[in-house]
Image (tube, rainbow, N blue to C red; front, side, top):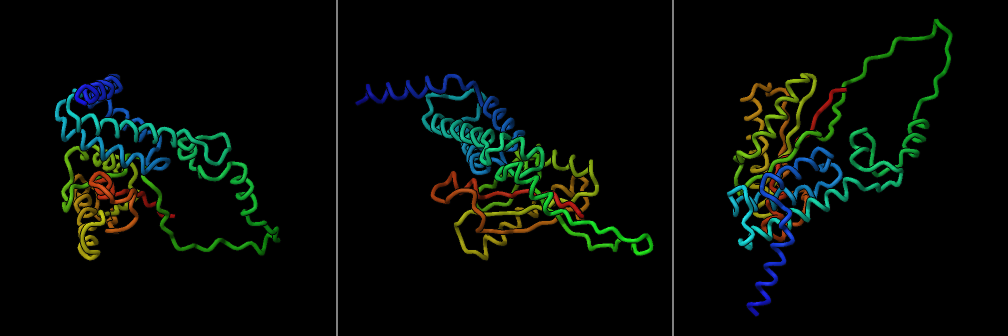
Length: 263
């Protein structure tokens, strides 16, 4: 039995021999984020980030210790989640020849074929009626509407159980958001906080809002006007994954960011 266990461990170690270190995994996660993993594969990205955080906790050094069974398990699950995310990023669900990440970059819907989009757009165009010159009236001003869309930069951070404090490894992401907001003063950002399923609804609603508020305070500290930041706490809702284990609950304990365009 001991011999079988040792052979199994050697097999696992050999399987991950190509994975160099923590920085390599971090680089892989950053690359899939750049390819719009948040829009194309949100569940897989969330799991990859969660398992990677656990991997760093049990393996503080840059080089991964393949003799640490927990490190090997978290490494396997992180890599598996990254692979599944890549599959969705490059998938073509609407069969129009354009992969998901390119659809998001173009601003089109990856679930609707481009031909159908074009037809629908043409049909939706109002038929213009030609009027005599004297009957043409100036357009009336319309009420401005808020158009909320996902923030394409890194747009999700996670929280420890029962806490609203921001983990230091997420500060570089927040700094990128600060930079984006400073580059375009016409945009606002909406921050939505979430929790896992542990505890009462009332408590989690408050905790979710505290998480969003903690991020708002950080952005304000970095020079963003509080008038440009909208916060909301959704608490126990809109889960990314089921809450059947600690990794999944960590994935759901998050804050998401959205850009608000005023039309």
